[in-house]
Length: 214
Image 1 (cartoon, rainbow, N blue to C red):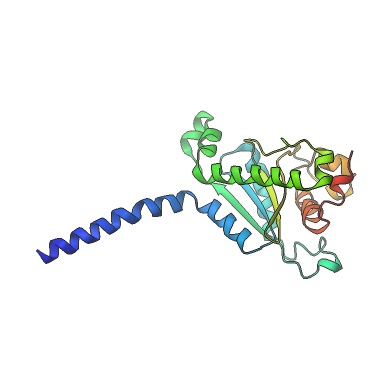
Image 2: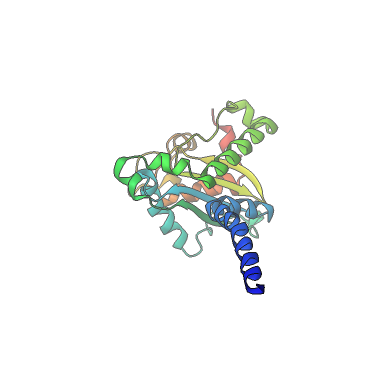
């Protein structure tokens, strides 16, 4: 009798925590982002899907960039030499069915962590627009992330700064650091110099060049 009672209590406990484990697992990427924000981190985040064609192109460059030693050496100026910038990738698992019937985007955007992350991005972008005079002079309030990936977003000291998901064509052997600001911002390409320049503009320079554009 005692054994049955203990078994019943254990079963109830397991059934109680299973939904929590499931929710946490489904939402782990979003939870990780929020935790980094609460910890006042400065970081660059990449959001993509393992079977998104555009993500596959950018992720190759992202992975190479992540492996570079002293990757931030050329973008940290003297006044920010103590600023630590981290880089994180938040990626949805490969979906075999979605890859075969071109429904990968539906599968991706119906994932709970993706829905929550995009809601956070939209709210953060809208708040940034309404509180920054330089931004609301140059952009419309609906300049928000749509259902488009890959996305790279920027957080400085726990505060959302901007996102990028308007990527250009893949350009090999071209250094984006030599292009003009206007050309670069209108059509960035999938390469590592793009990533370096985005980090410099949005984390180090903190929008100064970005908001002088017409």
